[in-house]
Structure formats: structure tokens, C-alpha cells
Image (cartoon, rainbow over all chains, first blue to last red; front, side, top):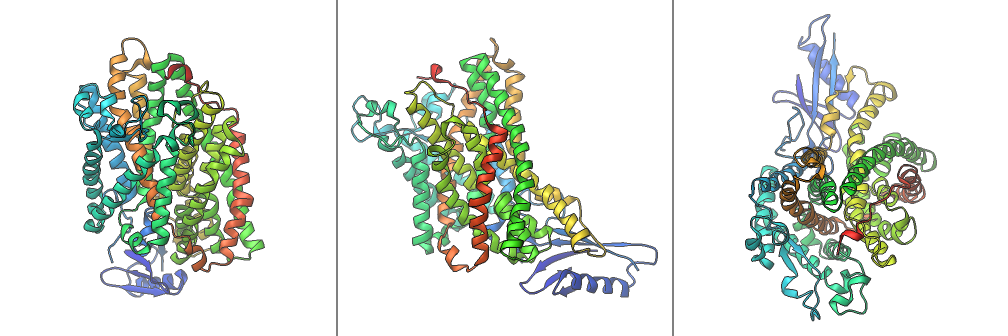
Length: 80
Length: 530
């Protein structure tokens, strides 16, 4: 699963074309993503699923992007 | 919102300034090498020379204040380029205007605003370049008489840099509407990264140039550049180990800042300004606003350092006795690439003029080596940011916050790697290869080959590099608004920055630079130049 990650000033938001997850902290966000993956049965017992979160650098002000063009990407591992 | 996330290793090659510095830099380096086959496509680059209103000996006539460098160096199109004169300014404007606009278009900037901004910035830059080369500002003690002067400021090309910065700062602080409009084209980091690729070409060309004086000097130049390469890396690692924990501790213990803010501020002040603040913010999973606040501080303080440190290192300590200590100390202490390289170029000019004046011309240093020492430490710092941020992310995620189920992908190192460094090293090593390979390290029989390299590369390493340095000074001024320090009300963070920078980073940076660069000597070329 691949999600785009942004921060809107209040919440961390991870989304793709179908889903959107929000959390005040990354822990809260992760809990929502895990809950969704498990409730939809996207990962079977004994297996692991990697959820990639790619930070969208458009969140960083344009004047700053010339200094560093990458904030961070992260992987969340979900297992039943 | 446009998606600017980095997913594949090649993402950003056409949409990031970092990569566009490589394309602009290496594009013109490769173009210059067509001279090997007798095709000169780079001799149009404009370059200023010292001038006066009333020349006494035919030298310094205002009509020759700008010329195309091909007039002096081209082997195959000398007459054509000699005919350009002041028109070389327009040629340079059009060719670099097209090249940078293609970049702006690919990066999805507002092209109309970029072209207007580029035009204004370019011609203001040329104007300051011209004024700064009046012999009153630029002539050294030794060549005042040639221009009919009794006194001059002996600033060399440094006067133009200072003027460009002043004009930029006036726009940035007193004409804020115009400054805001110009930000689309005022990109100091893009311009300086391009200039650093050209500096790589300069480093590679240095042995070729000095071998033209003597075979031994060519070898000394090669050894010196590699010494700088190794010493720069070592000094950077040591500085990292001292700077970061020091600033983190000051922030936490004395100013009681939160852990994540202290980490981001620690990187911003101690490592490499904005890029480190952003990288560290991401590594410790801080909200982007933390990095944004630190970055706003960094850019203003870096310009203050640029204004203060070159003069301090020239006239207070270490001066011409240890020029490479001074250069590398700048690299360790000035916190953005643009301000550091710009400060290095100023220092290079100041120290070369000082030693030439003090010794009555008996000691003349080749230009660019002091700049190279300032940039070399900064390049290593930039390279290590990605590794440092990765290590910090691993420590933070696995040990500090112990986030269950999170993995830090190793691809983070690549995404944070400064891509312009690739251009810098490719340009440097390509020229070294040409020198030691077909150029036979300057041995008899390879003179014509090396002359053709010189005809092509001098317009790049001299003309294009200086132009992009000038554009950097002007753009830095335009984007620097000192009022931000007062308005942003960061309180404690401003004080941490002040205390950390001037009472800890600068003194420790000088000591570390001294330990690794003390005694390194720049070759004297006085007997070989007029």
C-alpha cells in the first residue's frame, strides 16, 4: 500500500485515491491505518504488509525547497 | 496540490533545482570540451575588467570594461569573440536566459515572472559588476599607477560582490513588493550550486594551468586539491561530532527547548542550515513548522556571517598566514551553501589582494583555492547530512520514540543526497582525467591538447563561475529581510542561535579547521605572471 503524507498545520494526513487517514500525531495516524488494513483483511495471519508513506514536499514553503528537496518517507509494518 | 514526493530514485531529475544545477553546470562543461575538436561554443561569456573614466596609458578604457572571454582564450574563434565587446552581455543574457528558463519551466515555476525577474536580476548584477570594477574599488596597490590613481581600495573583484549584496539587501529590505516579485528568479541556492559545479571544473583545471608554468607546480596543485579533499572530510566529521551534541545540549539544558526543536535547531546551527534543519525535522518526525521556523532564522544569520567573517578572517585572524584554515573555517561555520561559497569567494579576493599588497607583488596566489577550501568542507557537510539524518532517524524511531511497526527506509540517504555534488566531482575528475590521460600531465607533446582544454574551460571556470557567484550575492540580498528576525518572535531560538553560533560554532570551527589545515600552503605563482 502506498500513501501520500502531508501535514496541514494541525494533523498528519495520509491518503491515496480511495482512502484518507488523519491523526494529531503519527502514532494516531498509524493506529487508523492499521485499523483499516486489518478490518479490510488486506493482510492475512502470519504475513506482514508494508504501508509506504511518501511525504509530499509541496507542504514545505517554496523558498525553502531550494535548500533541501526531501522531508521524509516512512514505512509502517502492519501484521495481524 | 502538486505531488512533489520522492518515490523512485530518479524522481526530481527534471523538477528539482539541485538536479538543474547539475544540468546547467555539466552542460556547459561538456560544451566547453568541444574545443578539443576545434569547436568553441562558450567564448561568448561576458567578463569585466578594471576601468577608469580617464585612462592615462590606454589601459582601463571604459569601452573595454566588458569583453567576451573567447577574445582572450579562444583558439578558433578569437576574432569573432573579440568583436562582441559589450554585446557579450546580451549574448550571455540570452543564452543563460534560455537555459535557466527551460529549468524554470521544467520545475513548473511561473515562467513569465521568472523571465522578468531573471532580466531585472541579471542586469542589476551586470551593473554592480561594472561599478565594482572601477579601478578605485578594484585596483591593487601595485597597479594603481596604470590607471592614473594615487589611491584605491584594493578590493579586487570583491567590491562587485559587496555591491551586489548591498543592492540586493536594499531591495529585500526597502522595496519588499519588488523583492517578493523577484523571488521567482532570486534563487541563491540554485545559482551557487551551479557555480560550485563550475568550481569543480576550476579545481580540475588548476593543475593544467599551473603545469603551464612549470611541471612541478602542476603536481603541487594536484596534491593540494587532494589534501583539501581529505582534510575537508576529516574536519567535517570531527566538527559534526562536536557541534551537534554541543548545540543540542545548550538548547536543552540552558534554554529548555523541547527535544525535537533542540534536535532541529542543533542541525540548523551546527551542520548546514536550512538543508540540515529540514533533513533533521524529517528524521525526528517533527511537524514541518519546526523546520520552517529554524530555516527562517538560518538564512538571515548566514547573511550576517557572510558580511562579518571574511573581513574578520582577513584582517584579524588568521589572515594570509593560514589562508586555508580561514577558508575551511568558513565552510564549517557559515550555514548555507550560498552564503558560505559567497563568503569563500570574498575571502579569496581579500586574502590574495592582501598578500600581494603586503609583499609588493612578490607573492601571488592563484585565485579560487581559498574558495575551494571553503566549499570543500561545505560539500562534505552536505554529503554527510543524508547519512547523519538517516542515523538520527534510526535512533529516534527505534530508540527515542520507539514507534511500533515503523521502518526507516535506506533510500532516505539517496533522497537527501545533494545532487549538485555529483556535478562538482564529475567536472573535477573529468578534467583531472584529461590532464593525466591525453594531457600526459603536462609533458612535452601534449601542449596543444591542453591549450584546447584551456580555451574551453576558462570561460566556464572563470566567466560562468563568477557570473553565478554575482547572481548569488544579488539573490541572497533580495531574499534576506532582516526584519524577520524581529517579527518572527522566536524568542529563545534567536538567542540560542546567537549564543550557539558566535560563542561555540565559530570558535570551535576555527580550531577544527586549524587542526586539519594548518600549514597547508598555496603555491606562489608570482614569477610566472605579469
